[in-house]
Every structure is written in C-alpha cells, then in structure tokens.
Image (cartoon, rainbow, N blue to C red; front, side, top):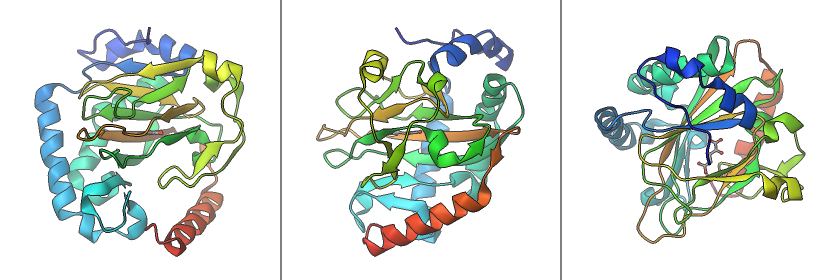
Length: 261
Ligand SMILES: O=C(O)CCC(=O)C(=O)O
C-alpha cells in the first residue's frame, strides 16, 4: 500500500502526516487539487502553451520530436515566465513543502511533463538531488497528475526508503529532459522497494531529493500522461550555483549540437 496523507482541509492537518514522507521518502496526497481548481489549471496551461511557448529559449522547452508541437514533453521554470504559474507555485504547494521540509523553502522550478501517446519515452531511474547539487540535500519535488496515470501510460515508480541510502552514482543518459541516470540501478534492494504509483487528475506525489524514482514509457496509442512538477529547496540547502550553471550550459550546447533542442 502507498503511504497516503489523510485529509487536507488546512495545512495544519498535513503536519500529522509528515512521518510517512520521512519514513518512505515519498507520499501520495489524493485530490490535492479539487476538480474546480484543476479546471483553472488546465485553462491556464492551455493559455501558456498557446501564447508563451513561442517566446521561450530553446533550453526551456523540449519536444520528443523537434518541431512537432504535438510531441511537447517538457517546459521548464514556468513560474518565471508567467504570473499565474508563479502564484500557483507560491500557494498550496509552497505551504505543503514547508510542512514537509520543516523549514522555509525556495521555489525553484515549476515544470510541465508530458509523455505523449506512442512517443513518450521512459524516465531513467535517478535522484533529483544529483541534478540539484545541494549541501545539505534538503529539497523535495511534487508531481501533480493532470491525467489518469497507470502502467499503460508511464506512471511514476519509487524505491521505498532509498532516500536513506545516500547518493548513487549517475551518468549521462540519452533521454532528453532526464540527462542523468543511476549507473547501477536494479539491485535486489532496488527491486524489493519498488512501489508503483497510479494517480488520478489532482493527485499529488511528493518525494525527497534523494528518493530513487523512474517512470515507464507511454505505451498507449491515445492517452497523454501530463503532470506538473514543483521543485522546492529548503532554505538551509546551499546550491553550488557555479557548478550548476556550467553543467546546464554544457548540456544545452550538447543538446543543440545533437539537434534535440
Ligand atoms: O514525469 C516523470 O516521468 C518523472 C518526473 C521526475 O522525475 C520528477 O519530477 O522528479
């Protein structure tokens, strides 16, 4: 069974449920956004895609097939490009992040993820903290389902308790949008801890930055697998800003040279 938060009529109620998040490294929050709230998010997302994408740098938007709008797979830092998404990130998600991390947080990245039908590729096993370059590694990611998500269209999977075993070694993958993957993934311990997370629109998955996770490809021919990701750092986490900048610059140059962005 997934660890699940109970109810959430106020943020105070979440504090009683921090324990499963700390124990397992992730937790599912059913119906974090209710249908009415979700309808507004959908409208604003459609507006963003129609009006804003064309104004963004190439490193901020990824397509499974370059120049095929229908294959849109990722948008980065939406909160920096649009007031609505800044307000969204700074509302309920930020409050919940503070409850879970037990300190004030810095909103870092609001991402759109899709795995379009037929072409949506798998997400390699990784730990977000490897990308973040933080000391201490105090951060979390929230993953808000916008579609019904299951094994058929590439649901998220976690290794329960893996946040307690430190950072694994990673190296470069060929997957656009997930440039790093764990080199020795698939140990007995990894497999024993695997937890498959189905989700309904509005459900939120929250994981720690050291929790190992991955997702399958979208093997369906008609269903999208859309989500919004919210990344928050704890204020006590120090980011190696220069190392991060150098990595991002090198990655963007490589992706451009490969014709992927
Ligand atoms: O959407 C996915 O496939 C994975 C997302 C992810 O790795 C993350 O939000 O940290």
